[in-house]
Image 1 (tube, one colour):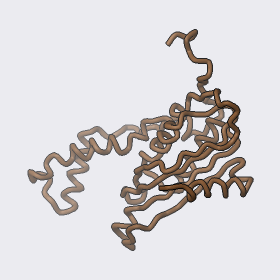
Image 2 (cartoon, rainbow, N blue to C red; image 1 turned 90 degrees about the vertical axis):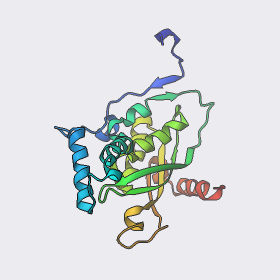
Image 3 (cartoon, rainbow, N blue to C red; image 1 turned 60 degrees about the vertical axis):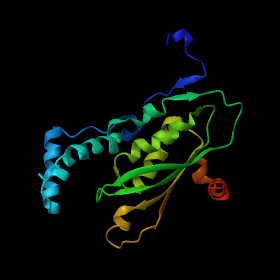
Length: 221
């Protein structure tokens, strides 16, 4: 689009003063294994599990697994600041917090590489400009589509919003079930882990935390 036709209410955000995990996608391991090496590793794991990698039913499994890896871990190729890069200044004087709740996500535990999944609830108090609501959901996915701990995922989402949008405050709550706890170990399916991270006005004012929690718990599911 020609510069003179760019909408004046859409503003790209500067990239200075941001944490490393906010301003750039993670640097890939060097040298990165080839696809052939990755598929060979899957064949090794199939054999370790006790099956025959050459058996007809699993012969194509290494290719499928690596295809799935490219999808499940695409967050390693995505940059958080680019997701929240454009903001809108037409807020009509809105001065309360914006909440997007029940953002479904899927991630993988960095300890066992087993899935954990659930819902993220994200709120921020804008200062003169807001970001598109779908961008908050995309930001959750950027960080979720990596090997993670729930605690780190919660903090990273909150930090990215805080540093990029510079709002008066950020609140993030994540509720998730972990397959490494449901399917192995203590084997307690249905147990939920809840994590929170607050910055700015949400951290400093208990009343704002109460309002945030009330809006999460008070409405229909």
